[in-house]
Image (tube, one colour):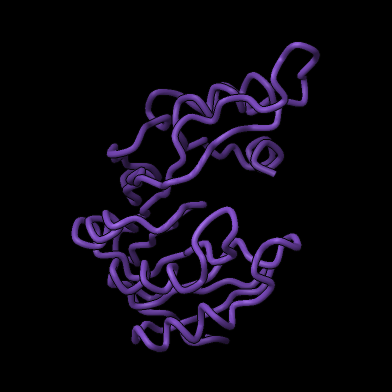
Amino acid sequence: DAVAIAKKTGARLVTNFELGTNMGKLLGYPKEQMGFDTLMNIGGEITIADGEVMVAMTPAVHSSGLGNPLAKEPDPEIAPGGSAAGFVLKIKNGPTIYHSGDTAYFKDMEVIGERYAPDVALLNVGGHFGMEPEMAARAAANVKVRLAIPMHFGTFPVLAQDTTLFRQALKKQGVPFRQLHPGETIAFEGKRIKPAGK
């Protein structure tokens, strides 16, 4: 959906260099909406939205590739996506959000917590291709977030189909849980979640 959203909104692409280049070349992401100001790599930090948002690219332990719709023999069907990554968004006068991306649990997640002190974490919990639910709960505790939101589950048969195990493991860790459904949003007042309907 990234290309359609970009063409509709003018959104700039924030990703690693390899994935960005291949999204332009193979999928038609508008080249004028990406550049060295927003293409980055793990460990890098940039500011966007006129300085209102700092974006940090964090490690992830996973593979990374992009389906190649132009592939013809002998071209590979999967184009390189560079290093797998997560992101931290630090919003001025708002929350700091950690998006793990698809990843396995890794001990250096603690450093993400120490450096950025995220308020909210979006964590992959489906297992099989990434963190198992119990390890995702451990990640939430080690990053020291105030709210954990599950993602990347129930999308196809080999993944966990619900968040029960994640929710139970979070409870043991003392980390609050919130599940969002497609189309649902959360609003913030500063770093606090705005009550629903206000």
